[in-house]
Image 1 (cartoon, rainbow, N blue to C red):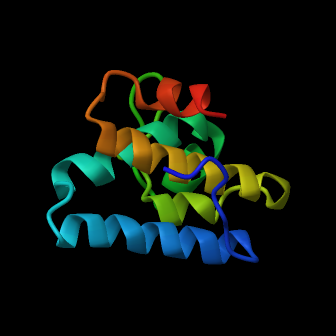
Image 2 (image 1 turned 135 degrees about the vertical axis):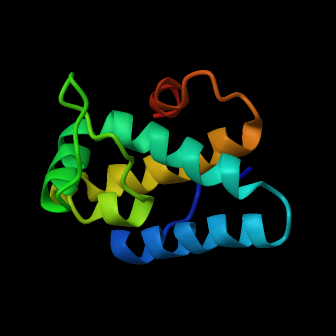
Length: 117
């Protein structure tokens, strides 16, 4: 894994490429869809709780007794709710969440992503 990732010119392009990367990892059998997507989404939705709640509210989804959405937003859907000044950090977090999902340690995806910041 490179020490200094090279991202696209815009965060939007980087998110699109990283989401495509996840799809390709699954397509070519390097990761299972029941692992890659849920672990990435769990980590990002925990880190970006406010954005995840706004997405769930806009989609008319239900919340648990703690006020957390019952379902995780997809990586690309969640990105749409991230403030413009936080989007570059979201791209780095998405990249790191993919790395965490591929590592096999699923005990605390959000904590693992935050530790990589």
